[in-house]
Length: 240
Image 1 (cartoon, one colour):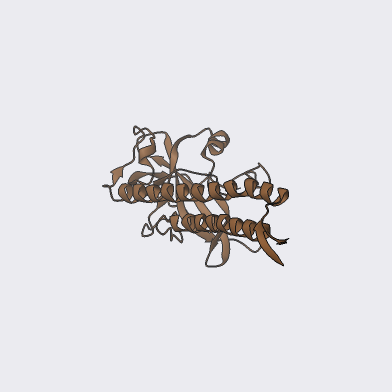
Image 2 (tube, one colour):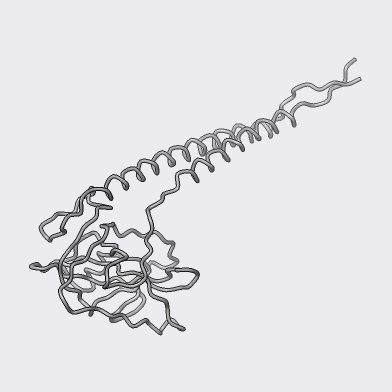
C-alpha cells in the first residue's frame, strides 16, 4: 500500500523561493508601468487640447511645453539639413527630413521635422530635398528629441558635409557641428502644411494594455510555479 504525502525537496524549494518573488515583482512592475503610461496618455491629451501658442525665442524651454500645439514664423536654413535614418513608411525605407528654421527677429533656430521621404537605391544616393527660401509660418506639435533606438556604435552622424545623416535627432550634436543657437525642442510639422513631405504622425499611443497583459503573464508564471512545486513534491510513500 502507498499514499502521497507532501515531501518538499531542497532543489525545488530553493528554485521556488528564488523565482516566485521575481515573477510577482515583475508582475507588479508591469502594472506600475501601465499606470504610468495611462498618466502620460492623459497628460498628452490635455496638452494637445490646449490653445495653440506662438513659439518665440524669448519663451524658455520647460517640461510642460512638450506636446503643446505651436506655430512659429521664420525662414528655413537649407544648408544644414538632417536626414534621420531607417524610418519605415508602408514597408519602404526612408528618412525623416529635419530642417532648421531661424525664428523671425532672432538668431535662434528650431528644428522642424518636415516628414518622410524614400531612400535612394544605395546608401550614397541621398534624396533631393526642396526648401522654400521665403519666410513661412509653421504649425505643429512641440516634442523632445529622444534617443529611442538601439545603436551598435555611439557614432550618430555618418556623413560629412550637408545634408547629413543622423541615426536620431541629437540637438546638442547639431549645435556642436553648426554653433547655432537652437531651441531644445523640435516641431512635428502638421500634415496639411505645404512645406513638407509625407506626414502621418498619428496620435501618441503609449499602449498601457500591453503592460497589463505582460503583468498577467508574470502572475500566471507565479501561479504555475506554485502548482508545479506542490505537484512535484507530493510523493508516494509506503504505508505499513
